[in-house]
Image 1 (cartoon, rainbow, N blue to C red):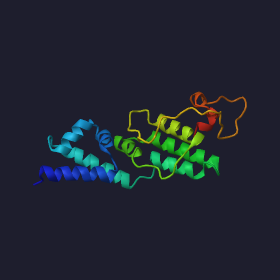
Image 2: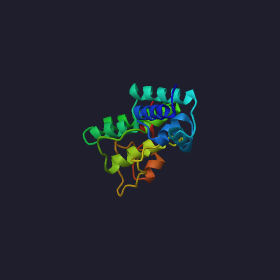
Image 3: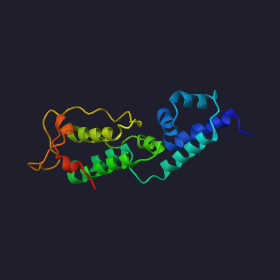
Image 4: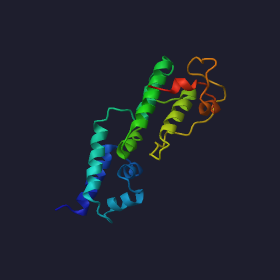
Length: 185
């Protein structure tokens, strides 16, 4: 028979396997962080569904085929200076994958990890803006995904097409990019 200590260790192990902190795990389970704290402290015994949901989240984290926010940062930072078209393609792919995540567990996994590379300047502003916009559905946002600061000088990651509208939100931050360049099929 399982004891409270066994249950607590299992919950903690599943959270670690998924890469979740407490708020991410609570979001994935559809409970409050304080309720999760009660489970972990042994004040409340979770249902078997809580364990099954965490096991499923850990499995999804192990076998994912989509990019987390940290993976998007790394992909953009790899080629932002040498191949801006590729960097933008990776950014848009990561944004689109984020928007397509269907379960709370997957949306919580999206926020796990930290990037291995750093972004600076206009690419950081562009990337952080698009990733934060993709997470405006209430999902956890990584602490390192800072709110973007407006650029001092206007910047265009791609050649602008005259006569086509700019993305207004990015233009307010000093990033000039045609709206259509942000649309994917």
